[in-house]
Amino acid sequence: MDAHCDTLTALEREGRRLGRMSPRGHLDLPRLTQGGVNIQFFAAFISPKYRDNSLARAMEIFDIFYREMTENFSLAEPAYNSSDINRILSLKKVAALLTVEGGEALAGRLEVLRMFHRLGVRGLTLTWNGRNELADGVSEAGTGGGLSSFGVAVVREMNRLGMLIDVSHISEKGFWDVLRETAKPVIASHSNCRSLCDHPRNLKDDQIKELAACEGVMGLCFYPVFLGNDGVSLETLLDHAAHIAYLAGVDCIGLGSDFDGAESCIPELPDVTRLPLVTEGLLKKGFSVGEVKKILGGNFLRVMEQVL
Image 1 (cartoon, one colour):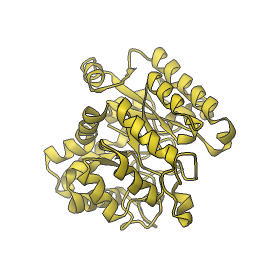
Image 2 (cartoon, rainbow, N blue to C red):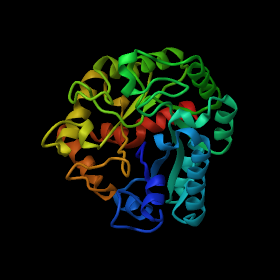
Image 3 (cartoon, rainbow, N blue to C red):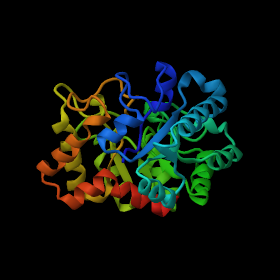
Image 4 (cartoon, rainbow, N blue to C red):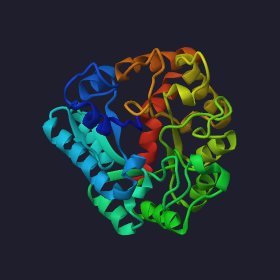
């Protein structure tokens, strides 16, 4: 299971189709199957260039998602809860979950959040890097800003609706505000360890510990910039997994590749077909078979059962 990709906008940008294998990009349905991924989160990323028209942009990307799901019904289906996931997996298809990356798509209205839920959205990354109506993102760290009053209302309404709250990209103050307000586990869909790679997109050790204490999960991101400096490799990614396990246990580790959003890849993982190398690497790193199963999807599935 992969908790984050930006493939929907990449399809549009690159003229690809989800059901056709392509030498371009990182992910499509044939390559997901080759890589052994059967649950994939597809993010509707709201680029800053659409800031003044973010709601309409979200709807355009939702349309891409559902057109691809209809065209590729033999390969994948949209999933809205754990029961859907189990049914779709029993049919040997990919279970596809629609998420939104950037709370500006809500246009400052809870009514839009509720409509997104009705349209099948099951997760929201509250911010991207900048500030929106919900909170400050990581690029606003100097302000010390966290959740706004609207952001608090969104967190509470997402709890009520049964939607995954995603704290990747949010400011540190915003992170702590979310964990204070939420009544359910939250996720960091694609984030790594700040103590191993000092980038503001990564989580500090105390954040990781608290996320785990609240039964949340963080998805290891494959983007080299968030993993280290020079010489980033698969082993670097595994080091982040080991650090999280040491700090907070295995139950808060998952995968959130950022495929088709990351500008570069780990050399050993040029696309999703190479994910079996992660499984092999985790086992060699000393994780047990049961622990690896949790990292590869079991932990995120647990949170989805609690939230959706």
